[in-house]
Image (cartoon, rainbow, N blue to C red; front, side):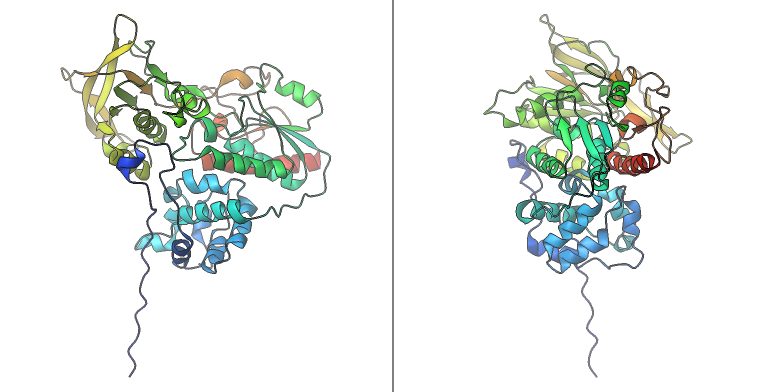
Length: 467
């Protein structure tokens, strides 16, 4: 009697990365990407479920099993074509999207083991398509309708891509000198190379999307003027660019940055080319980053690469409560970032020249869980201690930039200054004006902003058809 052959389970393939001791001193991409062989093996782990739950977790509804099937068949270009049906920025999403809490958490394989590495496969396909693919976009019949998009970040780019597919004439008004929003000014080069973002944006231009830079809507023009000048609809996707501060003594000293300014100076002023390019930020020997989200990790790891010897994450809760992705926390620890947990700054001290010289912190302990289950930090009296410091980066969140909202009469806002938009259509209180992404929800992820842009595009298309 022939013996039954037991099917060997293929383990999830890890992402190869630069050595921590090497990458901590350069701005080259940390994750190196799958090889073709690895991608095919990982794709073969997919069960090709008849009812794919993974798609339910994707804000842009990527055809996940379909593109993975093509990878397993080694038809990488067709996989790329399928991927781009729903996603206008696949090479970006494959790098920065938190798949572990979205599509991958829904994967059936993850119930008893490790889910399929959907994000890593997305990156592989997108990169392969950039290198070897040819544009297959066939421009639809023009509708004659014009749409203005304010903000060239993730939500605006996603909205523009889908509107172009519908046949509308789209113009993006970007305030900075280069489009991409947080993809360009916020996320560091070692996580998301600028050339990748620009290649994705080039694809949108080839689809017919017009991008106007150095266009500060709210100053040189307004939403109402755009509507009066021939645009049939407007989408506001200006994000969350107004940094929050701790409001403690010493925050006005030289050497204190918001994470927004710190990363923007490094990214858009080419600080990532250090030491060949003069860095536009002063880091000194010791840097403290206040906060524990992805932006805080980006800031801390950037400071290390700019030459800081000691970089500290200051966070008033424990490791368990840190909101950054596990992967980012692990990479930061591997590179030598030091975590001061259950700690909060109470003041920043300066020298006679007005530069930061130290920071006084207070130790905390966690109290009982609140109604949401989160344990609140409680200060320990008399536990103050001083850390010598040269630079402080505040990364505790951002709010909506009021430039567009305050220059648009009749636009309803909530108490935080975010635009109030219809939950189903994303139309605002002004007819023909839609909004999505961080300007509506508050600071969130790139993929959620893109999902809002896609949803708005569908609503705008229906609005224009019925107009």
